[in-house]
Image (cartoon, rainbow, N blue to C red; front, side, top):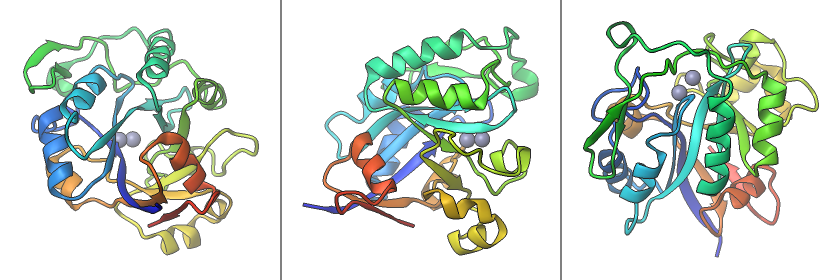
Length: 247
Ligand SMILES: [Zn+2]
Ligand SMILES: [Zn+2]
């Protein structure tokens, strides 16, 4: 049976230096369940160390967690990469490790990067600087995500910082981009008016939450489909098999 799955495909955890300390696995999952969010993607900057913990924290709850990451390309464009399975996500983590800047994080300046377990306990502090561009270009990044069965969504395209539309001014044809995400700052109709390039690509709305207030109050997208899986999300984005996206 097709029904609406409320999804937020862009949520940061305490691994992101800019995220609040309350963004822990159990807390995120609990608030998702409490507020009727069926699907969340954990999308920390250039790393996925907390993805397993959030998946584990969601076991036995109605919340589906998709492994994800918000990647910063060589061109300083943010892209949310989503995966269906941990196995392919782990492959993706290896790709990212090979393309990091090599610099270390300055926690006083940018914030600390906490790796935690499914009970919200601190496991370690991640040393690598996550808020930095990878040495991987946009086109290659999307190709490699797709090759692993993943899906790329351009982050917060309406915001000036790190947006594909502000950096390039257009969406290159042939780029393996499944959708564009609009930020909490804008409605779909206004986004389409301001950025004509969006007419050619499916649009989703996500919270890009760095705090629990962002998450609870932020926009969500309703995916009409049968199951909470990435292949169904892909079908919904392209309105296939009666699946569809409603903002
Ligand atoms: Zn971003
Ligand atoms: Zn983000």
